[in-house]
Length: 322
Ligand code: ADP
Ligand code: MG
Image (tube, rainbow, N blue to C red; front, side, top):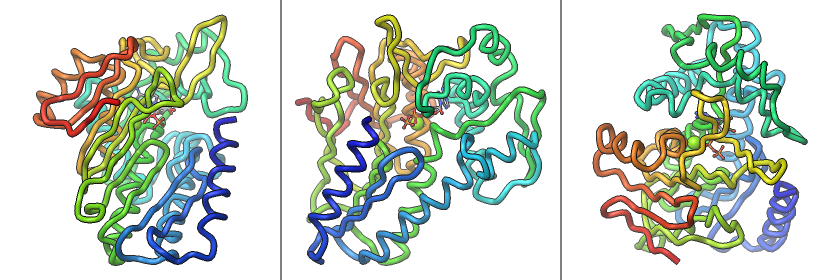
């Protein structure tokens, strides 16, 4: 339903913009299971904006673990093998942050996430036995990456790049746009925002959704030349017997992470890193997330929204609460 509304909105926006070549130049598409938009404020053209969206379309054929025919899907099926350079780099980055976060962010939980099937039409509770079997066989430790080959340590483990792919692709789109003369732009890949340069010589204002009331914003970030990723329990979920099951999984339990947080937003130069870290911090919970960020990413800007609605931003984060 949310997706249908998003498509209708995108069409309306496209209609409104037809025939006017004024700035900003805006293009949208639907890929990677989400609405994507590219808005150019300085440099580039409509063709360049659309070409950037094509990068996302093509990447879906590489990074999707669910789409038959995608490279990652085939690698999971074939239990390893040779990888394209792009998939190899994404997995390498994923394994690095998985290890760094002690598996809070873990690309090796595909066997668990596919049992939940949050991106399917009617997600439901997975079979408990199947989940209990998948948990001990899952995890980044079961995956070994060679220079361009991949091997799995058991028959069950599978790779899921869902928590890093949008960021990784955002970085690729950003590089393409900059190479093609874009000096000010905002890309939105389903909650992963990439800011290129400044807007009108100042900061962009980026609203952060209130995860406890998604028709409202919790506040806004004022920033430029940075990537912003939010992982939220309100992004994708289903409800059963009054309980909400969201799509961010704690691989220790196999169940949705229940860490007292409703969303985490991370700012980082690299969208792939911001994407992975927002997922990691959501799973870790506030206290452990802050210790983790302090150790590995000192000075990083982050906004935590707790389940009770209260907000915590790290020192210096340019966030204004609504
Ligand atoms: P979104 O996709 O809404 O931006 P995330 O970046 O947090 O949110 O990614 C969530 C997706 O990543 C899930 O749909 C699932 O495919 C996968 N995933 C779920 N939990 C984890 C986790 N702890 N570590 C890595 N990937 C995860
Ligand atoms: Mg993520």
